[in-house]
Image (cartoon, rainbow, N blue to C red; front, side):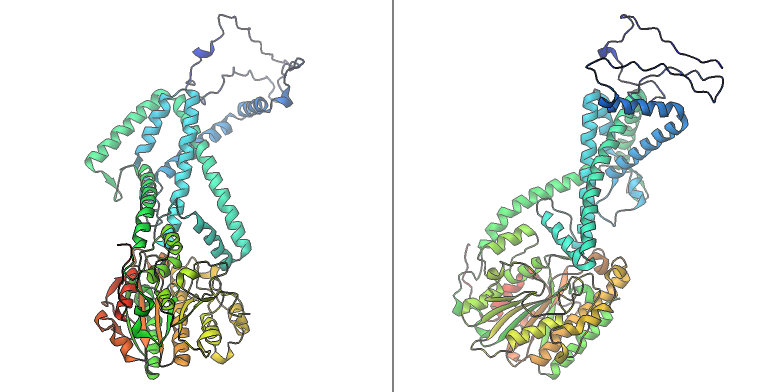
Length: 628
């Protein structure tokens, strides 16, 4: 059979192209920067391979194939592409389409789950038009660098948008690039407590890998599109001009499709929002530091603080995620409402009365410590920087006011604290019982280290039930209603609580967190059960152990996350004051709160930060301002 051999006439010096004369634009129909290859003459016998001229041996001192893997890979790719032209064409076009989808998707991606709808992606992003024009104007090297940076920026924006989605879903606000990195560690701890250590570790690894992939793939996609624009410069320029004209026309006429504007600049708008958030955070830091120094009761002598509560055992209790939704949502309200009504009647039988209202929390869905510090300090502590600022200072807290009098012993019961907690001094607590100090030997219930009933029984055994020379002021944090609300404890006989071993079988037979975490209705049901359990534990504790001198103030720290409270839910939480002594409730008659444990829908709503001063004033404290 004949063998065909190709010969190429060596170019003369005059025929060789100069480097500066090499066109940046590839011929139509071929990939950019792809070297032209002469047509291959097929052999007459398709089964017979074409003999190739033997490769010249590399000269001494020059790089061989093993020393130059990149050219070798290119040669391999060219060979495969020549032998499989259709497959190569499909691969190139598929890669280009995927690159375009990734870039446009990143430019149009919203930063909330509510806005994540198909109509959001049927728009023209101004950033794509501007980027195309810019890349067409740049030479090859600068174009590739600019495209890579553009893609990298899109990757960062995508990550920030995803973080915004998560933070909005769980905390009701966007991600703050200055303050919120530390919360990612808390998120991993939450996953570990809820789903197990292995799941948390894999989630962390997966998150890191995902971020790296997003950044790398987005940069490669932008470079791919930049080279495609250069390869078809004239058509790309006409397309960019047309897109710009359409965009401006749509802006001028307010054209919409599916209820959203066709022309958009959402990507640059998201970056602007992040930049404003950073600037506002930095400005707020200085302003809040000044605000924290001003304290209406900061210089009040101890003898003039809460004189009308002398001799009372004060208990301030926060119930995790106990929000307005627990009382008003159609799914949760029936069960929680029955619990509050039953608690009101049972306490009344023991001689206790209650009054209830609403407070607007400084946080939502999580970050309970922000709600605690807002309630106690009388300052609006709605971010981590404010929290660090106020807890590092000497601003008077409601709990510390009792210690300043010298008339109370002050303790904290903190079953959710599992590491060093230096804020105890700021809270004004002489003694703190954390998760390891309460003697619990039973199982954890998801995030909660122990059931509320056990924590309250331990508080009674260790502090409240002891004989003492002075009354007690206690700050108690109840955690059983912390998400994900599965598995849940249930009430047992108070005499059966023991060291907590009784809860082993209850935890083992409970609902798995993974069974409800993505189901809004089931989450609401279990959330309602958890709040009912926490309220029942507290009211039964007061029925069983309360005295004529016990005064209980309890409230929620924040609303549950949006999956349970609903999109656009308020930040209101219930608050109640319970006492036997009628003078205690008479002192707050002008608050116009609702009788009983369940506040009426139209009961007064205050900012949580206003409670401290109202409470101190109601019980006879004399203002002596500082920092004004």
